[in-house]
Image (tube, rainbow, N blue to C red; front, side, top):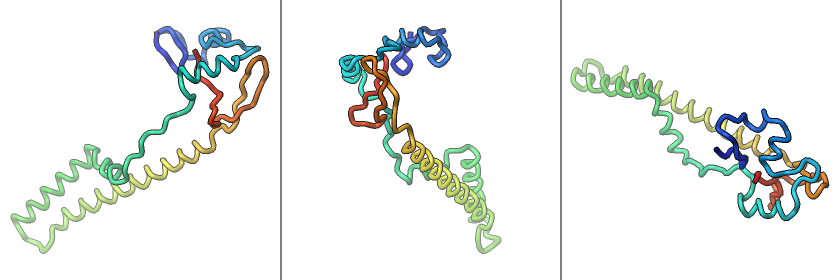
Length: 160
């Protein structure tokens, strides 16, 4: 048995969205007509906590930028840059190590573009998170209610 979003499931059981309504209601110990009682909601809140996504601790910008250099091809290009610069130091046929500078410029440009793209994606996800469901429809003590999904009371609870 494993727990998925508070629902205890068998190893070979399909996910809740592929199960019959009665099976999901039984797994959640809920009733389709009467929903949950106020006491059951409070007990589940105490037992399971709020039903919300937890935000990860933000990663500093400099670490995000350095993460752009983890790719094997980027590392290979940095090695090529070092080799080119070392050969330039030994031979000194030209005034500057143009090959090493060109390779390093490409690697840095790639890192900056990757960082900017990742930052834009994160801001898009943050905007989507703010646009999330403002209201949730629940059944409590036999009454259909519309509650704030982000309320401090957080009456949308996890099963069992």
